[in-house]
Image 1: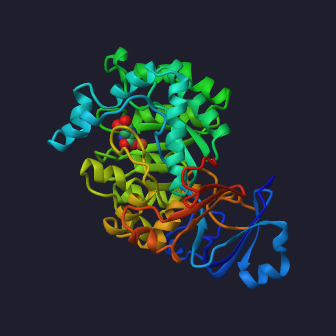
Image 2: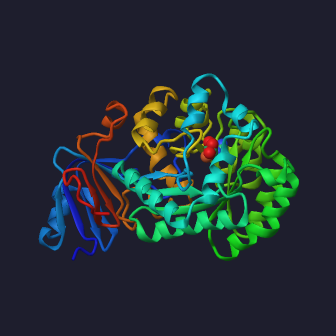
Image 3: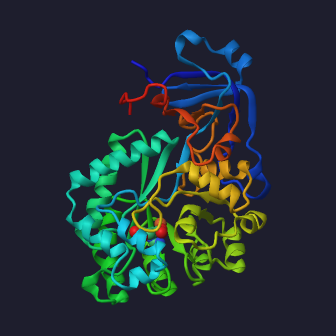
Length: 425
Ligand code: NIG
Ligand code: FE
């Protein structure tokens, strides 16, 4: 029985992304690569990392499951720090409406969008949500993801918000991927509130948030701060309460309209602000000063045909940038890490190195996990992706296709492309 003891040797490179905090500015370009590298994992934790010859002098191969990674690149498992992967139903119809020119917000104004998924998620059984969740996590795992954030927000009432969070909790316990839960009860105003946003925020604050906090059903609280959804004032009111109750803060900020979400994230000391397609320069500078991670979601900009966020400006202004999929049934139905790499490097002018930092250590920082995952450092969890190519440079270069050959989670191989069809996670 493998207790999570693995020795990876002869890797053409070990891309360590070494560090225990978010990388900013120039730091994002330095992947701290060890050529001809090796990694030792014991009982699920990284025990040693270095040149293969040195490691093999100090550790006996017979004590480990040995992986010969000749000609392969070894990276930290990817951290997808923004998704909405637990939901009922699909919205393929709406996607086609958008192709014909109707905007995402127009669809929402006409009673479609998020509330459509709310109906389907309210109607779905826990088992249905769980089974779909497992499938989606399996797909993410095969793309190299070892930690994922999942948001509620398709219940918009006590029963279904709790149901979504509890399903994610069960997925976290049963699947190899670690699932970090975020409460997004204020994702839209449900139909039964007839557009009364303040009343709905009161309901979330008094009836749902205290239970989420008390039962520790989520680590973070998020809100869709957007024109015609929730204002900056409403967002502040909810997030201050969530902070008081011990939750970390996230904000869907300045996605479609420049509303001041970035500034609010800085003011409240949020862990991250997300989307930021329209964030102001001032807001970006304030986020950098306050240490708020900018979680950028190029798949959403691509899918909505919106302008991409100003990643270069953010990095130049010393803002820590993370990248994530935003996997959800409306604005961006994809779990594709290769797509995110391609869009970030080709359209957002991020370098291949910056994109790797954004999907590893900075993704971890967006989830308050920079001390435990996101890099190959002694003492961190043994979460690793092994590519079928010798360099991380192939990730964006092999457009839209996954280069991941093996995934290791806490020292166990949980995905192996060569063992097709076998269930190992
Ligand atoms: O991050 N912008 C708000 N929320 C999601 C979309 C959710 C949906 O359309 O179902 C997002 O893009
Ligand atoms: Fe989102």
